Image (cartoon, rainbow, N blue to C red):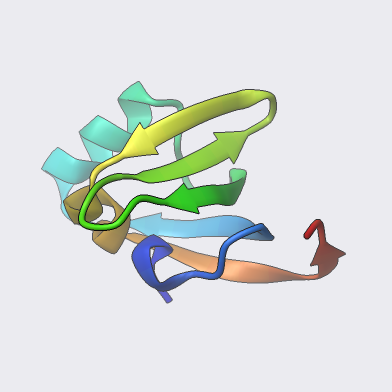
Length: 78
């Protein structure tokens, strides 16, 4: 699944990031394959707010669609 369609407040592992331009954008935020993140909020028609470690980052929907994630089972922080 991609980050845009992933559930809120669940621990996620980034599996891959799409095209190279979007990968560069993600790397600027410190987002890379293998990183663990959690969606804090999805603003209607706007960015998706994720948390990585203690930092919250708002990313655009285009980038969120390019980031493939998997749910980390057994970790529910709701």
